Image (cartoon, rainbow, N blue to C red; front, side, top):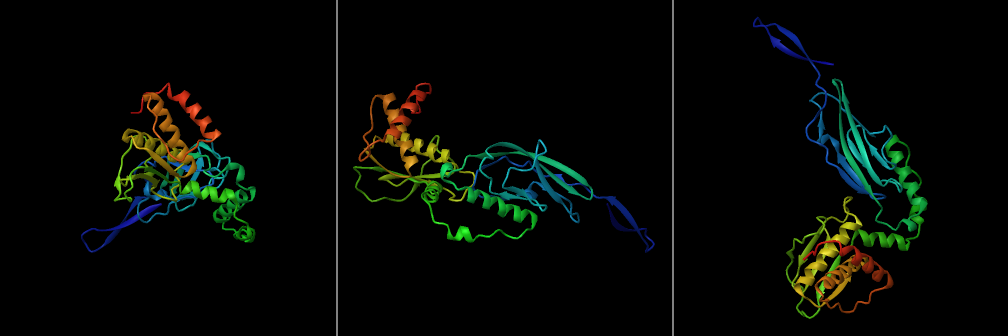
Amino acid sequence: MLLKDSVSDGNNTEAKVKHPMQAPIIVKPIPNQIINEQAAYGPFELKNFIQSPPGSTSRFSAALDDGQSLPKGMICTQDGVLTGIPARGTQGNHEVIITVENEGGAVQAKFILTIKPSLANAEGVSEYADELKAEIWQALDQNLPAPDLAELYNRAVTPEDVYYLLERWASLIVWDAFNLDPPGESHPLKLDGASPHFNVVDRGCCIVASPKDLFSHERTLEDALQTGRAVGREVYKRNWVIELAGFEKMVRATWVEIQIVGDKHNKPLEVLNFTPTSKELRVYDKEAISSKLKPDPL
């Protein structure tokens, strides 16, 4: 396509000068994306990274580097929005190729889409929920009628549903057991090894770790465990007698880390009102063996 500009020849007459339409251009690289299976992602605006000149119409499309379509549950709209809910079984690193076309040509850009395991208990997630999510995104992508949601509205809340929410809202409190002052003002802590997806604050009588964004598609269970371990190392350095409260897996990670650091320094930290289960002891045994190959975190 050619664009036309009007220019004067000095005699009050105008001539039309034709310019070729410019193809889309990449204004900055698309950053790699990390999401979870069965967690909502997006909308991610691709127009922030690939743009066309004014007056042109861009058409976006996406595919994997092997020519296959995007992982099940993910879509790319023609106007440049990447969104969806990755289905179970899509875990892995996927090289995504974004193609943008207009009247002047086409350009392509690549990025890595990493899909991590679901935060929900995989054994407890119903096949119905997976199928319904896929039907909803297919309907949105193809402008089809929405699927019948009556069964969803009448579906009973299961323990797995509740546990999923607990993981998404995962938080941890470590109390200085012999400090009887009420929690004071929050002072942010920057702890080595803590996830950037968590806020960690010192409130005098306790340290609190909580998610920065409850609905982040980037935060995984491993972020919670890393943060719990970092908090465990911090309270060990403070030599507190502690009590643990919060999300079960964060509490477990914190307790295990405290035991490992205590073993290395031959000085255990006292933890009140906590009796490790057989599962926690197994995790501790496994981590203790692994930690012997690592440098002392303190």
